[in-house]
Image (cartoon, rainbow, N blue to C red):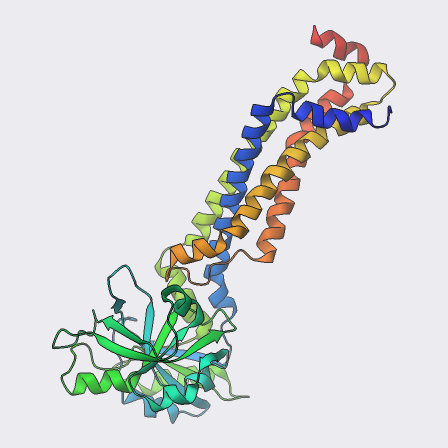
Length: 392
């Protein structure tokens, strides 16, 4: 019976002030929900860079990413030694029905898209259907789920960068729904024929810049990537448009830097949240230690040592932190799909990973240990007489 007494005291003391315990646990839940969400944003930003292929290069204008390259560059890049193939990517920038329904759309080279991006696979429809129909498109499975699209549906887009001259919509028939197995390409994008866009501009059916946004280049096996990059840059050194060739990882990193040092700011906010909640839990445990001084004196009078008193208070701190922090981690995991949907095209790869979940749970345990350590040590070191006297 005496051996079970400390454990019973843990739960009794936690519910001695139920409102205070509940508020502390709720604060921990909110804090760890924010920590996991913020960390997931950082992981999302890094995912595209980490999953970038080492044999893929991106050729863009040396002036700016927003400067269009001539279509004649395609054949010239393919003629460079070490280049296996190229794929055109031009940002379309339209929207579906109203401006709030915005997602990424790219005009691309349908013949080389799958060979240069082997991580793409068709889960509904067929690649052949996409190849044969110039006005067709491919959509990611997550994008199709958002708008409840299926193969054969027509997607009308209102062009902003490339408006149609008669004011009508661009109509694309869904030939297939794809799934990407890597973060380098998300599942919320639409691809359509670059030839369809080029022909519309040439015939005067649409307005907009004529050319290609970027060329994605696949390097042959065994070829030196740096040499291929130098050859491509040197080929257009004298114009008409100078180019800058980078690895896919460097190109992905440019987008992260374009929106500022988000990982640094997000990490800083996360650390601030962690220390703020640490101080809150520490304050709670200091108050609990002061209130339980008489209990500690009685325990020691009954023959329990300082180690038992120490463990009683430490278990209270751990219980609060693990329950509150665990609920916050579970809330972050459970809401990941909703947050990804709310973020839309800004963070289409948002996900609370297993690593983030484990780190959050470990963080809750560490916080409980740190917050309870000083109060538990002080209480455990008090002698029986001192503890009873301090209560008076």
